[in-house]
Amino acid sequence: MINDSLYKCEKTLPQMPVTMGSMADNQTSDFRNIAPQINYDKCISCMICWKFCPDVAIEIINDSPKINYKYCKGCGICSVECPKNAIEMEMEAK
Ligand code: SF4
Ligand code: SF4
Image (tube, rainbow, N blue to C red):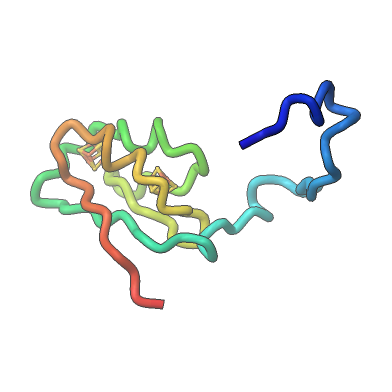
């Protein structure tokens, strides 16, 4: 929990790492422990998952969504937003 008596403005916040590169440098897969799997039998290619993915980790290839696991952080937003329940989040073996 943040102690608001410590943090009054941005100048009192601790230093933190900031990425200087583009999103292409942010390969967020290392901290993923669950991964989305698309069931293409259920998928209707509406691309709602592509629209909602905060890491732009879903590509459209031949009118079909494809997860780029280098960039997927496993947040599960695509699974929640899919209107056909076509995306299951599965535990990953590391
Ligand atoms: S949101 Fe679901 S149905 Fe739509 S493209 Fe993505 S996986 Fe397919
Ligand atoms: S789990 Fe999150 S980061 Fe990965 S493809 Fe779905 S919305 Fe994008």
